[in-house]
Length: 184
Image (cartoon, rainbow, N blue to C red; front, side, top):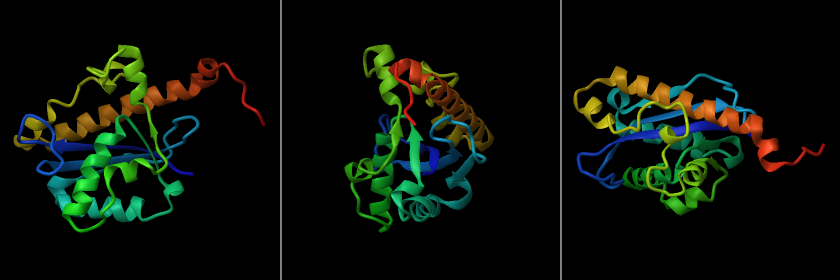
């Protein structure tokens, strides 16, 4: 089983994200140990501004979604968002016709529920509210419009580090949280 931190960044000209009209500007992933969160590879960033949206969508579908689902376990925060966008783009480019709910049926680990528990509400339950991630993503729009791609990459690296640090903390303390001992 291969775990991969997985996330996308999107660009929306409108007020609210819309998978039908918005653009996926990056897809990032990094192989990590599911049990410890330890990185097992370097962060990979597929960049729309270098390769085009269709190219990065086709790559991620071929590389991850056409394989045995146990060979790529996405680990992320609010993966439902990613699946809505990817499903729409797969359909748009004639790659795959799976719905977001069909993608949700694949093996995955989503830790958004922790932010909801901590906040006591879905409103404001973001990765930046429970990790060392310093920004909430609202800066992406301006960075993309001004073609400040290096800053987008820096944001992605900060977000990845925040997520992985949080995941490692969860993994390290899972036995205490669940108050169970691992059985051999």
